[in-house]
Length: 115
Length: 114
Image (cartoon, rainbow over all chains, first blue to last red; front, side, top):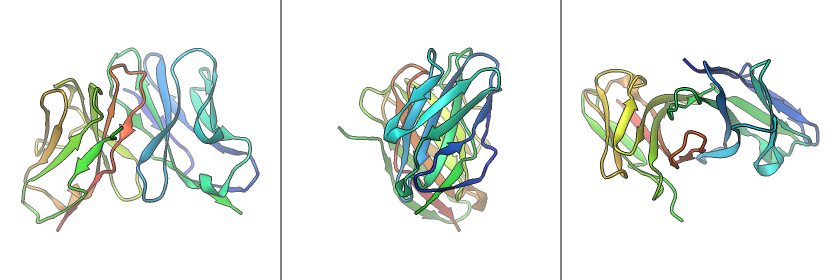
């Protein structure tokens, strides 16, 4: 069965500093990995995904994530945080071997960016 | 174009009553998903549809929960004999027809069981 872990409930960063939100996963086959963001009083939005190919993927709002197969990780990063990045971030995984659409989400990490 | 819509946006019901939650996916999206999000928590997978079929119902919490999808479009999540622990935000999402596709989420239905 697939699973996702986001080990940090909360991440605090100063504006202008780099940020990292951690995610590790477990699947039986090859993973499809996703990051979503939930801004206050707004719906969940897709940020980026890893399907295959280049381990570094770039997404919306200047975010990027690095797929590391040996460490089964898919950490979300941004070189310079903005106050407007403050939100709830979710990592999600699908198991490509099952061929299905079942998606498991992590518990979420709340990011606070301080001015 | 129109996004995923859900109705009602809020539902308050009494313990023991049945409720129906509706989801209208983005036109052309063959995959549809239901999740539950308790206050400030993560998303709990409930069920997904590929077309009108639900290959994996393992996420439904109990036999009080059921879902159907008709015409490859609208889906209804039904909770029978609601309990207070069913109180949560129920989110619907849809995607194109490959597992590599990302999901588009609706605004959710906030269910409160008194």
